[in-house]
Amino acid sequence: MTMTIQVRGLSRVFAGAGGSTPALLDVDLDVAEREFVCILGPSGCGKSTLLNLVAGFLRPSAGEVRVNGRRVTGPGADRGVVFQEYVLFPWLTVAGNVEFGLRLSGAAAAERRGTVARYLELVGLAAHAAKYPVQLSGGMKQRVAIARALANNPSIILMDEPFGALDAQTREVLQDELGRIQRVEHKTVLFVTHSIREAVYLADRVVVMTSAPGRIKQIVSIKLPEVRDRFAPEFTQYESEITRTVKEEVAKVHE
Amino acid sequence: MSRARAVALIGVLVAWALVSYGNVALELMNPVLLPTPGQVAAVLADTVADGTLVRHVGTSLGRVAVGFGIAAAAALSLGILAAMCVPLRLTVEPIIEFVRPIPPLAFLPMFLVWFGLGEASKIAFIGYTTFFPMFIAIAAAVLRVDVPLLRAAASLGAGRLDLIARVIVPAALPGIIVALRLGFALALFVIVGAEFMGADAGLGHLIMEGRTFFVPAQIVMGALVLALLGSLVNALLLAAERRLFRWREAAATS
Image (tube, rainbow over all chains, first blue to last red; front, top):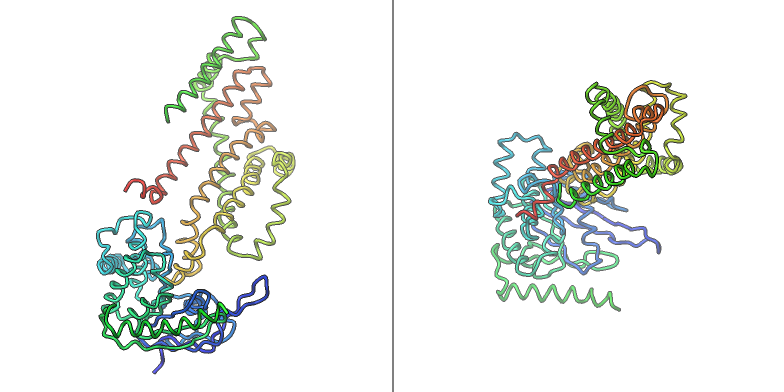
């Protein structure tokens, strides 16, 4: 069976003023179809670099990323991206943003309308289709961004700390919604976060990374029911287990 | 127009009337040298009546439209290209930095030598004058487009041309419109100079004629028509801009 995402010996070095720093070193990772994988680690551990390499925004210094067997050489419509800062097109309405990818692929007007309506419904924004991004709250903007990525029907969704800029309440509401959406859409998801709780709540597997240079320290399979309870004893057990692993890493940085 | 602006404009008119008619009454200087609003209006009425004003305005605007149009098309395509292509930018930059400080009028005689006294020299001169500032402003506006916007579009399947048409142009449009306004104002600015030399029609020619035949009222009238044209075009572009950028005002009205 070929994996949806295959990362092999992936390294990325950034050249800076004080010499070059390896952000990511020799990372191997397989993500199966329909799997939800969270990349977890302290800031500067290269987790966003890993995501940007899979997205094709960056070129690897060594190694390669394969998506559905094909080597990644640049960004493409098979990998939808949701950014921390939403990155909506401010000159387009909510519907126009969601429609963007469909227009590029040349979908017929009727089909576009149907798809846009379906995904705005899915993220609970059907009533806001005609608004512009400046009129929306952060949480609403991120829902639009999620609908925009899904409407384009990519095989993979890449999410780079998508709820990192939101307040705690909105964050949990959107985690719930993303869980619900995933039970409908069954996408292959690579989700970067520094929140252990968020990772345990959403992921099938949590990839814990070490910092400077970024490597994979441990991969934890979360064997919890699809609909999760943040206060269940099993949930908190995963949380404390992963917390211990991450703490070792944070401590190492401060040594 | 706001009330304050109307008051300011009327104030200027009243001051002009007081000084010029006062001068006529007191003869502080030769009244011919300081035309009154009445004299200017009379010249305006005459030139409107015999159709010469319309002809001159039409000639000038035609030259501006063609010269500015060519320069705008070139500045837009080359500006986007230069912003997207680093080697091209690095090649073009020093050339532009060298040419830019030369006052365009210094080259006007060269254009007359190259293109003769006809339309071509005026059009080429306006094109030359307006191209550089527009090119620089458009390239800068394109360079300011957020990289994440391009990444978002690319991950939705946008190719190079889609990126230009659907992301770069709309994202840079506020800056592009400013560049075009600047270029158009500059075109009106220099066409007069170009028409001072070897032209048989146009507002610059009309103004120069006022000097040759010693009709100061005609000089003032020509200048006022230019002011009117400039603010009219500016108002049109601003209105277009407001319509185009409704999304920026959406927040305020919701």
